[in-house]
Image 1 (tube, one colour):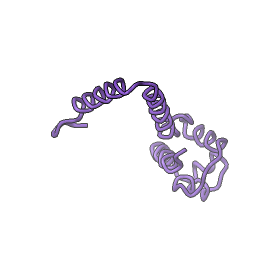
Image 2: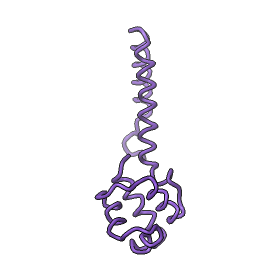
Image 3: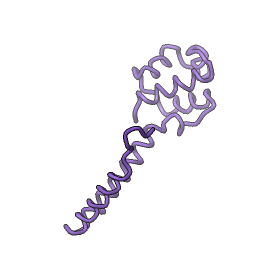
Image 4: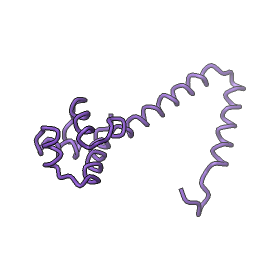
Length: 115
């Protein structure tokens, strides 16, 4: 889990709601110091605390953790591709490499294109 991104997301959600750290701390029954530590990545909250914070912010745990979830999902896709590649013979591997190179070449943003 990326606690730094979690802390930033909690802070962003809190600021969107125009809550102070004190107000959020009161809603989750934690100290203001502890909430500040979480937002600064100086403290690692328990799952229970993350759920409490999500509820207090009117969001979901998935939303607070989406940066971590995306990374794990991407890693699983890469692992699956890797497993499939190992089962191919050399011709198959070269064929797939050619496809990936062509895809990458034609789907690169051109200079001047917006991302």
